[in-house]
Image (cartoon, rainbow, N blue to C red; front, side, top):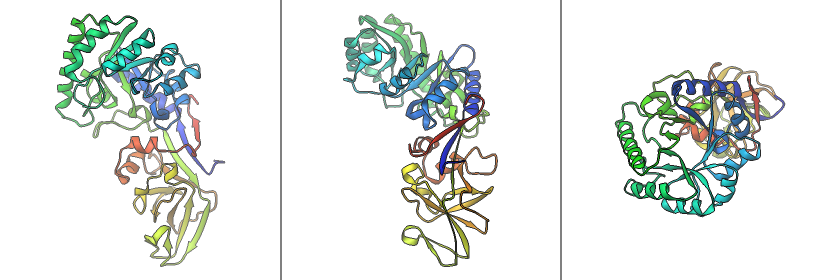
Length: 366
């Protein structure tokens, strides 16, 4: 491996997922790859270039800064950014042809003052997070339709419970979204793209597909709907090398406060990543890793830069590879299991892998 730790990203798997999700979206809908947060921790530029070769036509980011990173790398595909203050630097975004989401009247006015812009009006259909409040939607679309220099390229919203099979809120949000589109139509707005579906919507709710779907977590290989298998391939393997190996007797306390004590003579293996690198402290005495193809427990507290694995009688040597999580094909833990042990979701695990951990790439598009 050469490195003491790495997050190895299979770009072939990401390409496969992009093609699969585009196929599920159908021939009428374009696909947006959501590459915010450094492509969910996978590396924004390698991922963006990979997906654009595999059925994706749009890229989605949170901030204008993330959008500029794509433009600075020479990527000229349509980019939508959607979260910023009403007083942000919209001129730079407009100059770099980044589409801007609008969630308040103040944002629309500020963007219009900055120059001729393409915007996507976001309506809150039930998530109660970002998006124009329902009562303010008619006024906003009226102003947008009359605002000089503003081109309404899209109308969109975000689903609250698409990953909860049978949840009635999906149908309710579709109905509200249709109402919003009708209000906009009566104001003279016919957007190029209407988009509502997130990863779970793509996989399990065809009625949400419209003209554009937004593939986030699913793009990186995590099945977004419990009980529904779309055939996605996990893209990231997190691994490290043993940097210290000790054979210790029974009754040996391990790591801070000795919250783990050996019951028998055991080999203890030091792994050189910790919570500063994205290994949750909640995995202390709870999580597992794979050593020589066998699952072994994390022993004691996870520290900032390292943790200890109880390897039992396995013959471990300095430099041996430890798989923290992967695609599960060799019996190693998956990111979903890590998320369950850490009482969180896979999104947080993947985006939490820190900058000290080098990303390496392989697969057909590496």
